[in-house]
Amino acid sequence: MSLNLPDPEEKKKEVRRKLRKLEGLPTLPPIVQQLNAMIEDERTSLHQIAELVEKDQVLTTKILRIANSAFYGFPKKVSTVKNAMMLLGINVLKILIMTSSIFEILHKEDVGLWEHSIGVAACSRIIAEKIEFKDPPEIATAGLLHDLGRVIEKVAFPKEFTIINTLINKGVDPLKAEKAVLGLDHAEIGAYLMRQWNIPDRLIEAVNGHHDIDRAQKYKKEASIIHLADVLIHARGYGQTLFSKVPPLNPKALKLLKLNIPELKEVLIKLEPKLYELKFFTEELKSGLEAQ
Image: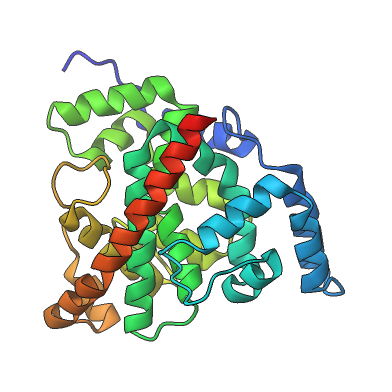
């Protein structure tokens, strides 16, 4: 192979340095800093936080659009930020605000990856509900973010991204290709950035462990849900990712979640109408972006 690949350890340091400085990444809205301060202040009410967010019309529209999409699956329409916050929780709202600028790029750059991400979010929620796991909306949000590292590769490391795809086209395993070129795979990159953003550890571990649940120290169940959802969405062929084949399912995930094959079939039956709804959601997004 005639590609000049860097020393993985050196490249890993360089990638982490760039992520620490958030170089080449979309800037987070200033509202996030205010929001963080308000969330940490116990005297702040939900009403005050909602009031701040609602001052930003674009952000409000994005939050309500996502809160009403099929991967959260609320039975009634969410019409206000305060309502969204009560249903989703402050952590999820904060993450949606933080990632809105990145997902805007993702919509425009790679609709296939966006479709895969929201498919995994919907499936994660169904699995979480099936096993009666606490806070399904938060798990859905981890599903939404699971391939955040892929977006970062494309936006912040375009040259390396091209080399990774060249290696994959030559038959190299996608995760090995990322490691060879960047010293980290997309799960590690996404988790590293989430850590910079002070996102809760259980979501970071779920993202970091979605291809290898042993990476999760404390939150193996969360990682198992995202891992299983990712495999099922790949098997369903919904959206597009690095993988031309379905990634291998770790049987440990089924054991940890106490799920059997007939129950997986039930998850898939429940998932199908959600994916149908989500297809309309992404089509609407696409046409909205084309009109901009």
